[in-house]
Length: 495
Figure 1: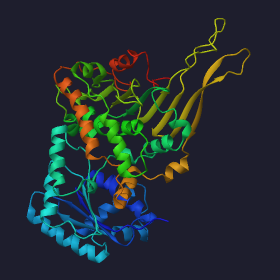
Figure 2 (figure 1 turned 30 degrees about the vertical axis):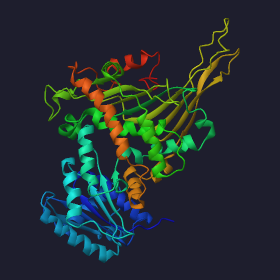
Figure 3 (figure 1 turned 45 degrees about the horizontal axis):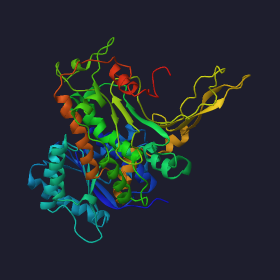
Figure 4 (figure 1 turned 120 degrees about the horizontal axis):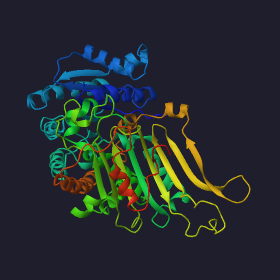
């Protein structure tokens, strides 16, 4: 049985695309399951002028667009909990109006002073909003109440700006009240990494440099920059994907087993892993990371001729790199990462490549047998969720030869349908006060320190863009990066 949670939500950027596409439908799913029921209210804010009825109509449309029926009493009751207030985040006088409305709704819905502030807008306003929430009295007081701040990325654009932002937030909120949201941490198979590792002796006993040759993380996007061009050109793949999503996945793969399955213990182990991540010097950064920018093909324009992109842009749309951990578990075992836009397909996967046997007894001189293939454990994150384990087995013909076979488990269609969306999971965690699947400041800071060094090196060089064809798996340099170590990407086109 679901436990009902009580809270008044205040969404800054409450009429934005993210709110309508993801946040409000996720809240509705929590409502249908009983995690929210009678004791909650939602206030949406933006600069636009709008009344409650118009806002509620927009909410209903967002529910319909996400595949929900909106002609039911349940949907109408849910939408009745929504209220709208136009707001200028830079005008302190406007916060008095919000305070009055929050206090009123808190009493009406008996939310007991629990408050969640969700910032889904330009990050330059995060510090201002956090400060005014406190100075203008919107944070409730009391021993048994909570105030929680949820922040969308980007959390800074380098370590220095991230630290300034964190210092600003810390003046109003404690670290355990700040939830830096990363929707990848809400995905089913990313959360399954901990279950796979720490729930299976067979896996965890082999999860080290004695048995694993390398680990590969691929986040591939089929589309280009689309309507995000203005934002993306000031960010690029390194900041947009590597610093947050990929570093979070890698930390889950690299961390030690926590003392207990609690947010504080899990975060502590992730921080230890990131602390041991080798920050490259200039020469190693140039050698171990490559970047790319997609060109044109047929009707598809190259990146520099997309709308709102400067024709001389040096922003990367692809990154591949090698990460090394200087610790006992992972010393000598590289983590290869890659991500990019306009690639062959949209998918996210982790490939764990195990070492081959020291002696291949089947490759005796008279044998026509091919060398044993490496065992590979693949975690499929999206679009399909599941696991695959590649083993070696005997073929069913005469003689004795081996071939790789796969043991597959894919989540079936019904289970996939019933699986909560990432934002639904994460909003539920915010209501519970569970920070397990959110980035802590130490994690963010170590990730930025690593990424900043790559960025500094790239800023000293003029890239030769464009350098990869749309619908490929990136530039040739990404292949050379891994081949230089006498390895290859597990996922390759046409394999």
